[in-house]
Amino acid sequence: MIEVNDLTKYYGSFPAVMDINFKVEQGEIVGFLGPNGAGKSTTMKVITGFIPPSSGTATVAGYDIINESLEARRHIGYMPETVPLYTEMTVREYLDYMGKLRGMTAERIRARIDDVVEICHLEDYHTSIIGKLSKGFRQRLGIAQAILHEPDVLVLDEPTIGIDPIQVVETRQLIKDLGGEHTLILSTHILPEVSQICERVIVINEGQIVATDEPNNLARRLLGSERVDLQVKGPQQEVIAALETVDGVGSVSRINIQRGELPQYRVESELGEEIRADLARTVVERGWELHRLEAVTMSLEEIFLRLTTEDEYSPDGESEVSE
Amino acid sequence: MNTFYIAWKESKIYFATPAAYIVGAMFLALTGIFFVFEVTAPFSEASVRGIVDWASFFLIFLAPLLTMRLLSEEQKLGTLELLLTAPVRDWEVILGKYIASLLALLAILAVTLYYTLLLYVFGDPDTGPVLSGYLGLVLYGAAALAIGLLGSSLSANQIVAAVVGIAILLMLAFANRVGDLVTGIAAQVFNGLSMNEHISDFSRGVIDTSSVAFFLSLAAVFLFLSIRSLETRRWR
Image (cartoon, rainbow over all chains, first blue to last red; front, side, top):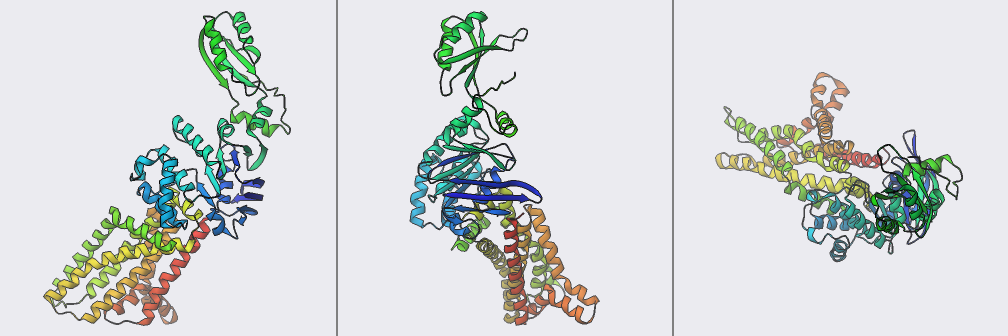
């Protein structure tokens, strides 16, 4: 569906993207993971035909993005990172305008507006002026316009940035639901988001692809295990012994004790095991006070450190996260 | 069709938001004041010559103020990214927006017909120069809007866009003043490039095809430059 070959993009003399190659198959949901300035947005702008590559080619739905630009653009729905919208229009007017620009018939526009408004939960905002909508609703409208013409390819640049946590969950679900019908590329710098939504993740750093894998594999190879940190008020040896008895727990270790602070424990388990509820129950059942319980994920910084400083990232995850 | 949709959308914004009304009101107030000066001067004649001369001068400022929003705001809001990634050709964007600004200008000029009406009520103007004068104004405005649109394509800042448009227009309008200072071919070139030189025929009741062609080509050239400017935006 999407094919990118040796794509390079310079801004002046600065290479934003260098020799990128990847393919996205029909119906796949692919996540672009990388820190700010890694080249995610640039790659997306090239794929959508907004900026031309300095060298290399990209095809969307079989159409070259430069030579058959108009045809390629017809097959793309795009939401840029900033979710640009015409603030003085109403939701309906805006969708109508975008539909017309994409060559849809008036009838189809009417039918599709009803569809996308329902899909994106904008029913109550048909006639609202876009400028008065909250960030979360604008985000949904951004997605609504992108899927309006039922494009083969959906390109969403940071679709969950800047909205509140509840809306983030809703938006992720929405994107996941869209995955069935569309080939989908989304960019993000949030690791759990990728593992929740995407079937495949492309990690990009400083304009180059550093890893391509399934999200679970990537996490497993990088992290090696699932980690939970606890802060418990109770006799230390007994706490450790009790935690070790919980099903699925691999190892329990004590981490930093500072004067006056409650002891903290780190529990490691097999990837994919959900042991937090059991851990909490164990602690509470013994009558100890549970002050903190938190799953430890690897921060993006750590991942990039790992990916960019090691040629082969180790499968056993001998990483120690220092406190 | 895309041109029509874009023109329709932009026209709606012109007529639904206050900006165009404020610019229009300013234009009408200024032309109105100078119309009064013209007709109340001793031995004044019942003609639109005064209106046309002054209106064309004010168009230098009015046109860029009307067009400054058209592309600058899309760049600032980022909506240009969605517009240019939709299956729309660059020239359709430029032409659509240009047509919308032309409609807004025609609407404003239409209101100045009120002055002409007064001339007919209280005097006996020659109809020929009235018609040719208005034709000249429309042509002048058409060229000025294209120049303003180029300014708007160059910057995401509306003020910068307007200033660039006004600067180009001032140069083209008053090139004949330079023409007065030099002689020979140079004088011909400067006078030939001067918008004011070309409009003066119209206000006298003369429709010179070369002047009509001048304004139309000026509009075409600057529309073409705007399209190229939009294209090169992708490279910036």
